[in-house]
Image 1 (cartoon, rainbow, N blue to C red):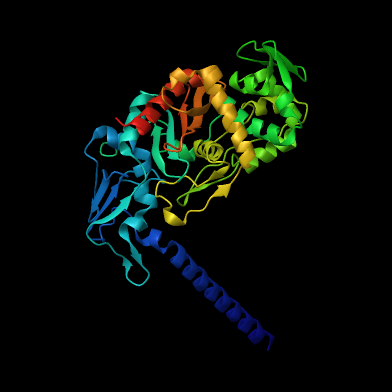
Image 2: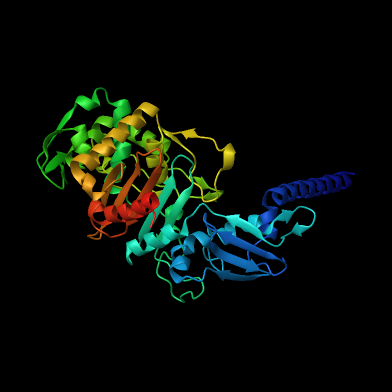
Length: 431
């Protein structure tokens, strides 16, 4: 009798496991069936699909499994990581990630596609071409979005290659869309996060002054500055990108608060761009009073930031503290805002970033642009620095946010600043 009971219990357990498996498979089929059955280049799907930019420029065409790309070389190369390739090496490319939208999917009949099916990206491929050319062979990232709509107009990542003639030994990073899949040392652009924390947690911070004699001692460690700035308020400290001042400000903020703001502003989070996960950045809490805390507050130590996460932050500053998640597909009329900054804090930060341009960078460097910005020169441990330049236009007619990074490029303003100006001038004035 015991044997029969055990066998019955085992049979029941197997039946329950099979039932649970069917339920799980059914759930996955309804949530992931399109990606299982549909992929750009599927020879079993007939008809023609096209992937275009916002202006109707065809970036890729698929007919019965045969994929072709835009006939212009620089367009292909500058859009390579966004569009994807023939072999799927770029997992975040549109032809891979949005295959279900290009193919169509029916839960009964599987893949479907009719003639003329089209997927339009928010990208302006001509801006990608300008950004690729402006990078001039250097590795880096150029991102531009409309912070009122979230639409990404420019997303270029280098090194790149031609999808129609791929290299057998591509340069490291070629298959990576660094805009969303890389995290880099941010340097002084991180001072925007430290400043945000200080504005909201340190009483009377706007009345504080800081003395810079070219270096400051924190817990027996010398932190050097790029200049000797004398006594300055916090506005001048940011405009001068003064390491001495921000080493002290980080101590005033404290480790817990700085980590909290790195988290709440999205630095350490995985975000989702149209269902594509971004890479998380990094912020390690260092002990209060330590030099490591000061280094982290000025964007060094172990700090890492994804360009997409930085784009979200500068977009929020430009948009009264709120963002629409950056997108290459568009949100439509149902898009909702997320508030990641207090509106009063965002307005104060806007004033700081405009002051950077007016008192330090020079308005003539960006003629005709109401630009609010922060530069960054991020030391990366090999004697070189990543050049960052981030910000937005304070312009209702041209509400654009941007992130420019030139890896191992040197000074942020001198190297990344002109690239930002080139692309923004093109966005605003055309040509």
